[in-house]
Amino acid sequence: MTVTWRTREELVLQLVTLHRQGLSSRAIARALGVSRNTVKALLAAHADARDKEHKALLEPPPRAPRASKVDAYAARVAELMARYLDITAQRIFETLREDGYLGGYTAVKKYVRRRRPPPRPAPSRVAPVYGPGKMAESDWSPYEVAFVDGHKEKIQAFAYALPFSRRKFVELYHQADLHALMDGHVRAFDRFQGAAACCTYDSQKPVVLRWEGQQPIYNPRFLAFAAHYEFRPRGVRGEPNAKPRVERGFWEVECSFFNGRSFVDLDDLRAQLARWLDAIVDQRRRHGKTPLDRFAEEREHLVPLPRHPYDTARVIYRICSIDGFVAWEGNAYAVPYDHITDFLPVRITQHELFVYGADLSCIARHELAPRGQGLKLDPAGLHPPPGRQSPVDLEMLRAAFEQMGEDAAGFFRLMSAGPARIWAHQARQILLLRERYATADLDAALRHAKSFGAFDSHALGRILAARATPRSLDEYVAEDTVRRIAKALGETRTGPRDLVEYDRLPGHPETSGAARADDKEKTPCPDGRAAAPTRPSATTSSPSDSGDTSASSA
Image (cartoon, rainbow, N blue to C red; front, side):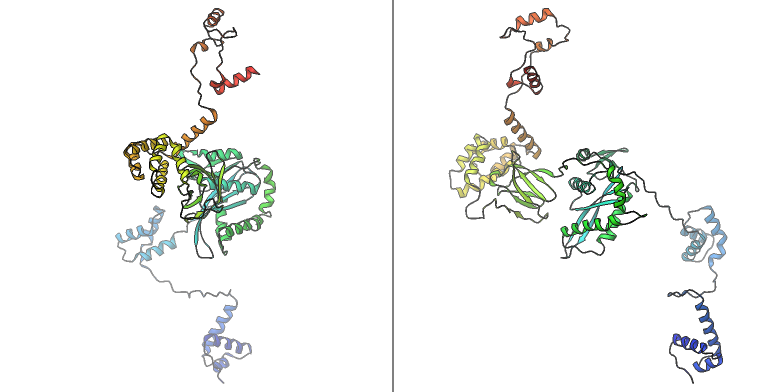
């Protein structure tokens, strides 16, 4: 009876089954319809396979070696490779062609690859070792994150790592600027309740402005921040292994945090990042200890924190627009109408925006909106809803012109003689010129325009362009500072002293009893005492003199 089979696998299975049942090779061949040689070969292959390691990927069958055209030039190839250790296969091929080789480049390449030993792997760089609390590493890394609603954001990841305990801190920002760098350090210090004595950075501009040879020139503002927390920045360049722990930390962020997670928004991303740092990074065990175990040894060696954190907010000056808003990063934030056309200090943290008046009192506070949205934000209702009448009162316009000078006040009286619907808009546009020109120049231009009856804002702009120089914001800030100091201290100034007073100072070579007597006759005092040393009055005292006066009165 012949057993049917369709595939080789079925044939081998039936053959092995019949063989285990004790049938002879002749009987198996007759039953399966194959030759006895096939039966013997399959049984031998089966026995051999059971004694070897099984592999799912079959090895290629052995082939008989075939002669190559390069074999005739083996000695020449060996000579070239011995003389020139880094010679390429292409150069060997060109040399063999000159010697009469008729084969192709691929044969030469494979021959050289078989004869040349593989390159030895480069040894890993040894990471620098620091004691507890001695060193930290900090850097930035950009990431493009896709949120669940489909939109993508490019964010900057700030990292701060302690090499000794291997504890890490990571925070996310929209920009990798100086203020974000300082804010990231403050948050890292709060997490570790201390700071390392030194921190390594690359040549990022917030830390290193430039290099003078091998000496880094540090950013003065960052040096002030480092002095507040009493740690020393260390700028490096051309040292790829200077901060390996923080670089490795970014690899962990990519492979362990971003991989396999989805995020609703940036707040959700930050919340998941904080949980990942606490539950995963700080709990990883290495050599029998976790970073928290090693940090217990390092905590007491960290520099203690000051009583109050460093203010990492950005302070800028912005002009309040005619409709009562200050602009920042593509959005407008409401300010009371009393401050239109004024330059106002603006303090910006990572989440809020504060606007201050000229006396540095806070006049508006806003939560930061996403940059570039073109929003006008007025959550406190500083501005009334839009109506037919302009929210900027006409008396406010009159007061603004009167504050600029007599010529501006006279110009406004002539301009406001007509209907308000005609001149109110022109008055607002003229006030906006204060952003580019000094108040004195604008007052002079208004006097010139008044003499010709030119009450149009475009005419004022042409007059200023021809007669005045546009000023920068720094000039306005300096001018405003001088004005406020003069208001607080008064307009008096210390006048020059008579040189005779310095001749009467102790230790002067010409000072003698006769000279003092002569001086007494020349400059008598009401009480009859010698005039030296004459002290200035209280209204003309300088800071140094005021200290002497108080000391004498005491």
